[in-house]
Image (cartoon, rainbow, N blue to C red):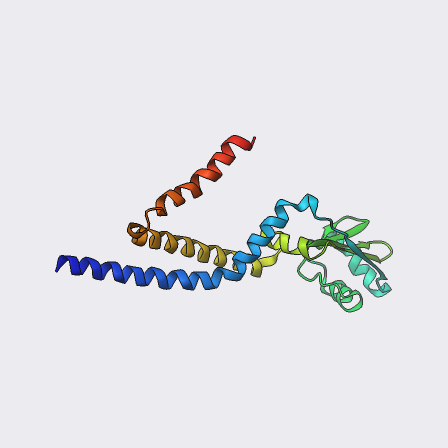
Length: 207
C-alpha cells in the first residue's frame, strides 16, 4: 500500500509539473526566441553595421501661442495643452506627457525611443520648432526591446510577466529532472556542467 501511495504521489506531481511546464513553455516560446536572437545580435553589436536614417522637420508656432511658449520657462510638468496640441496637429509629434527641459531661450523635449532617438526644440523667443528623429534599424529596435531601453510601461509589464513565466518553465523543468533522474543517469552531470562551464568561463576569462 505504501509503495502504491508513493507511486500515486509521484504520478500526480509528474502530471502537475508536465502541465505547468508546457503551459509556461507555450507562453515563453516567442519571447525566448526573441531574446535568444537578440542576445546574439547584442553580443556582436560592434560587428553589425547600422545605417541610421535621420528625419528632420521644422515649423513655426503661431503668433497667438508665443505668450504661452514664453511662459513655459517658469512652469514645471508637460507643455501647456495649446502648445502640445499644435505640435501634434501640425507636426505629428505627441509630447502631451513629456517633461521638457526649459530655459528662457529654449524649450527642449527629448523623445527617446527603441531603435533610435528623437528630440524637438522650440525657440522661446521666435517660436521656431525644430524636430529630428534618428532610426537605427530593426536590429537596434529589437536590441532595445531586449534591454528594456525606452520601452514604456506596457512593454516593461510584459517583461515582468515573461520573466515570471521563464522562472516557472525552469523550475518545473528542474522538478521534472528530479522526478525522472532515476531513469537517466546523465541528468545531474549535465545539470552540473550547465553551472560549472559558465562559472569557469567567468573566473578564467573575464577580467
